[in-house]
Length: 584
Image (cartoon, rainbow, N blue to C red; front, side, top):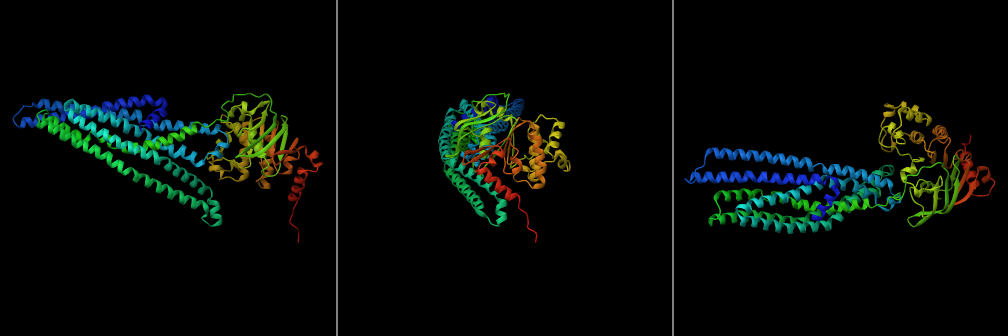
């Protein structure tokens, strides 16, 4: 438990000063809590003595005591307010920074990181688990540290008047600490299983939601709902089993504290009978017995949650230790924009995709990459943008190995238009300006006009302020494609990669998109992955990728004269594109 508290304090970083000031406020708040009890016990004791004909109590002294109690109560709430203002928001502030930091980390890792690590685990770490740390971490530190501050302060107060009673209270706290250690050990054993169950539930939920369209189309529940139900059942069973495992330790913890409260009163009563303690001090001990352990009784929950938080911290530390793909990169400025592959080999999951690939793309030329599905075309583009690092050879832009760059300094030179366009759940304006956040309204609209999307945008109810659904689902494929081209135009990068940009577009939209692409690629270094002949036949060079190798290279005319994959590809395409419905 102490280890986890130190972790959270370390995680708090620059906010630790506020923690310490909060502990100080809690300390003074505790004394202001104990003070009224001492004054009230003293006043009651003297009033009882006065009623028996003993010491005479002046009324002014009673009113002075009442005023002191009121003042201490006000100070108590003032210090409690100060503690809450200092500590309560630390978790929220730090978690917000942590999420942004994790976003920066995930942006800079290789895409292979996401195939090697469970997406549900990453999602759980950044949402539910970090929320546990955000919402519970600070409260648990408050419960444990401030709880023990309070009990120590009150025990010190009791000890000044009755040392045996204070020793009885200390014994109860020590014995309860052994029970808390048992809770902490139990939680350390069960927390990994509970985390695994939550991660599986997150992953199953994502898969189920994503596959709903398939499930509905076949009218069946499918395997995804079975996995979802199993994940829900496993999560329930593990949580129940864990809770039952804590019950004996929780009961033991509370038993020692309640026993110590009784022992405190009995010890004080014995001291009164022995003539070593006054009646007012017995009343003070009795009053304290109701509240002295209140601040540590709830620490059993804190011990359990702190162990869970410890597992969260392990996950966050694992994310923090992810290798940045550009950790050795620098800010590189380019004065030319040619692209070259020099004996590149690359693969993932133990399977090599590209084998000893070499070629060069002069700047301001258009290169088309064609080949069968799975031959490595998209992988070539992923290596140019350094989504992955090569395993052998080198990829160069402007004469510089892409491994010399930081991701940002490399990608500011590259614009990509994908086959499957992703638009953010935001306005159309912000989706276009994603390519250049500082662009003016005039620049943004000019890019939209060049991309042939201004007219359909203006026909929408809110024009450029129209909010598109997640992924751009409220727009057609052609509309999304043109917005992505406008985004690339606004970025105005010198290297353009078009990855099957018109593959899934209907013929009516294709004409508009081809016109938009023609405006986009003017004066750029262009790399096109495409299957349509009208897209590739005018390229300055064509690379034919076959089984992870460059099988052929040349212009359309040169390759048509060779008996190879390209000519076969063109012949098949011409037959497919030249079909028509026979007239009866």
